[in-house]
Image 1 (cartoon, rainbow, N blue to C red):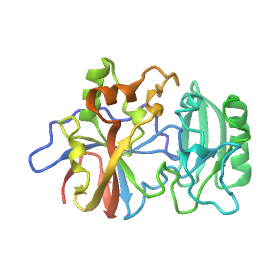
Image 2: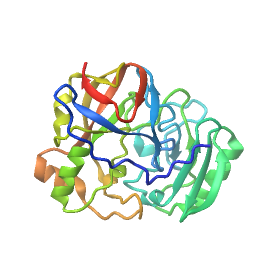
Image 3: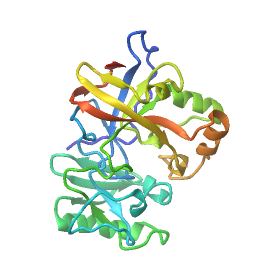
Image 4: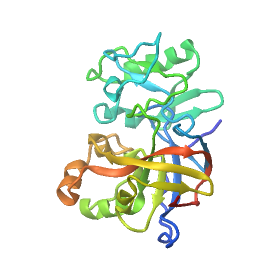
Length: 273
């Protein structure tokens, strides 16, 4: 079983990108259960018009969700437990095995529940814990749900997110405090060496590694979820208003659509296609 630590999000700072390359890939991350902790990867196979494998494969639907389990289809994030409203979730560490789809949840280093998410019985075990753990702010009962062959990301389209660590360093300067990349829940961490240079990619086409190509679709607008400390589950910053006042936008990162698939590894470059 993979046993990623949610503290293993890369924070390396490589040399600035060369003239030929836009950025260096410093991390690959997926979130098997929406709003739970990340799984860091050294390599991943990406397919055209798809998210990272097992990214947001499952989500925690609340009791008032407009989600039909008999006919599952993508629905908006307001139907799910999300960090912006349910910051308690940040206190849980998740461990997910993509081969068996076994999920275990830990708190303060102790496993509090586990179950096979492929089976109703396994999901029921995890749901029982979550219904007891989550406070009254979320409508009950909550359920673990999925959509076959789709990811329950915030967008109906199968997009992959990129976060520029050079931009995060600039944001740290503005905020006057360290900012953990996990707050932004990105899939591909990169370093361009120049803050906010990823904004210039929107509308263009990039190459990731040797073979993967992608359209840069749009900027990623940010909400209150990034205010939650991923270690303490406390809202200890008010980042979005600071971004607006300082930079004149509410964005951090870009979304891409994979148009040509392939293998991607940490340390490879991003260049113009």
